Length: 401
Image 1 (spheres, helix red, strand yellow):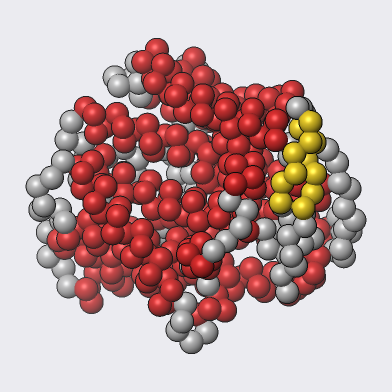
Image 2 (cartoon, one colour):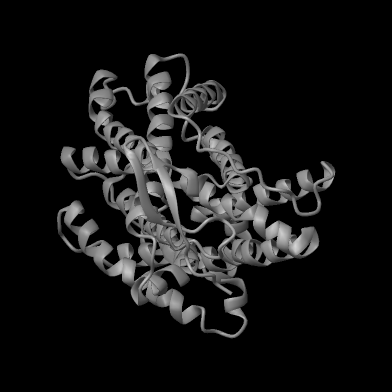
């Protein structure tokens, strides 16, 4: 049962502002659902931009046609990478403690294995193989029948658990299992009491961002950006952020920080996030990113340190800023928003095959890559959510998605 949104008073630096929000105990937080929709669409556009701008990693890319395409593509992809999956993990973790408390360890873990484990296996070993085969046949001219390719060549080189965008589902499942283990081993198997506190101070947030940036820099001394743990498709150079924000989401639930975030802090960090987005260009020019990208990816370079700190402050700024903005202005849902919210998870799961097939079908269309990106995006976003709605109507599928 969903409980009506109460109105709470949020202390701001300039006085008190009344904002309709839900504390954690009040059922669904619609502004969080709306953030998830935004992030799902951003993931879809992120991978489309890689296809058309060639910045990033996707198994089909049309590459860069000119400097503007490459520059704008790098900006969009780099800025998105800096915060959107971290925010995804934060809002996902926010609901983990409450679900565990309500269901207990056995039922909670069973539910997570169904919701996360089944899509992970289906995508990795059923949906992805024919997509890879289609790409190899149509683009690289593979002259091998499906019946010879699938049991042999595919499983030699492409059968990776958590392949493509499903690395996130895999990571969330791993983090969730570790949370269950921690609750059991620490003697906190039953419901834990909440200890509501004020939202962290700006100095505390800045210090956290600084430490997060330094942690990212140190990890990349060992493994630079673009390195991946292939058996599970995990990009460990970003995991300092992912681990920290998942834990932050767990703590935020217990202390009800999403409700105690003040308007002053929300606006400040949203401004910091936007400033960091714009700071990308001076940083790229000062570090000569166009000709020496390697120095940004890791190692003992000032560019790598500056990039890690830029990334962490942008991440914290956008996480706090978007939570504030959505709680303040998009805390409700109409029929269209509900449709997108209900189908966001399934859209995330299927968007890889959908956009890749669309890009392959349109690869001979002679348009500027940014124009193609825009046109394909206009079709791909509603198509993914529409197909998700149809898929979720299949028997037993709604239990998973």
